[in-house]
Image (cartoon, rainbow, N blue to C red; front, side):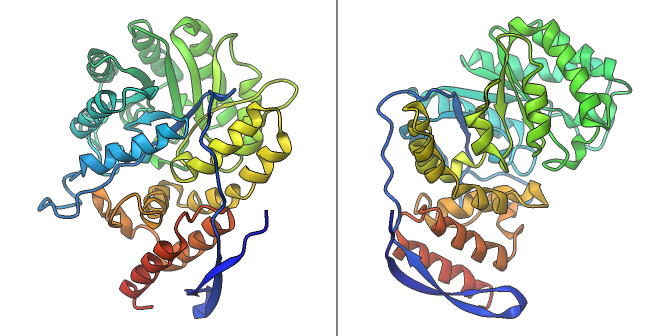
Length: 387
């Protein structure tokens, strides 16, 4: 589809240079009329309250209305909601108390959406080692709280377990106990160290393939209690290898924000469903692409989704843990919130050149829904940086 240039904007470039960039008309995307042939969860961000008197590095101040409104936006495009996950700054500004309140509000306020919510151990004190029994109890507490609300569970990786486990057997002990108690099958989330350095060596193995063996044994022994596993290692070969070894009935949910397009499409031996943070930013395009995939139109799928991959790789570039800043920036550019302020003050985690390139890539993907608004906001941000 030919897209005409509609505006120009002066953007910073490498080596202190500036360039005149032509912004094109946005692409048009249609909302789905039927379910996708892939299960697709969008991990959703939280919107901060910029008028709160709370110290942003110490307490989470959340604009609940805007946060829930964004979940309705994602649901309207056909996505399930992965709630209170790392995209919502879990462990980077969002604590367990606010996470549980967020889960409650989403379940009550967006009843049309399929919602799965993160249960972990993040209410344990950080920087300390804990007994395996205490870690089990922490998981049990969060799982029970979510189940009491009627929610589905995503069993998140535990920093406390990574710091305290002495062997792969400690991981197995924790997961066997928790999976033996849950009321309905859960999604297990293996979050790689590129997303959270504190999770290095998860499953008791530094090598990912060795860790995979430990994880697969847990899945095999508890397959009736596992809906699927989401791995976020940013390595398509590792995901495909594990996907082909999963027990029957256990799904692979891609968490690969670098290679999601080809992983979701799959191959002759299978495909990945999706639970992705990038879907928060590219919901209209991803929805249209998944509709094309459901209609067995691979050309349409790739034409829509392929331009979003460079955008996603930029948002999730190293240090990957700061990707939430790009996600919230996109929501602000597109008018879904009135400000670019984040819990934990994380709006400062990326530099002006990063934002400028993100702007270009979002435009290339046709995702700047209101170019005039996006340009105006981009200019405001640059002025704050003295540009």
